[in-house]
Image (cartoon, rainbow, N blue to C red):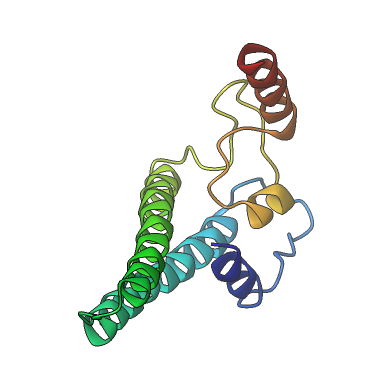
Length: 143
């Protein structure tokens, strides 16, 4: 996932809001649609790459060590793809929020999440204060 996020960040210019531009204007929504759709495309390409790799490299090794190594490699790839599948769901939810005019506002307190935070984490649903508070609560409950 970090590779995908890193390559995604190279594909867009940070949004430059115009003077007196309202938060989550059509231009901003289009900016985030482009980021989210590009990220989603990259994830789908990764899935295709994994499928091709597993089909091409699948072999029935006679040596148990070679077979175990291949199975471990495939297992790691599948876990990565599962995380990316969950991320794709979050991306789709973010795109839906854009369409519903809910994108960019904190689910907890309702304030603006902020352009730069959303560019860093386009699927964010909490402002930095609410996210920090949630993490503190999670640490306290988790031990």
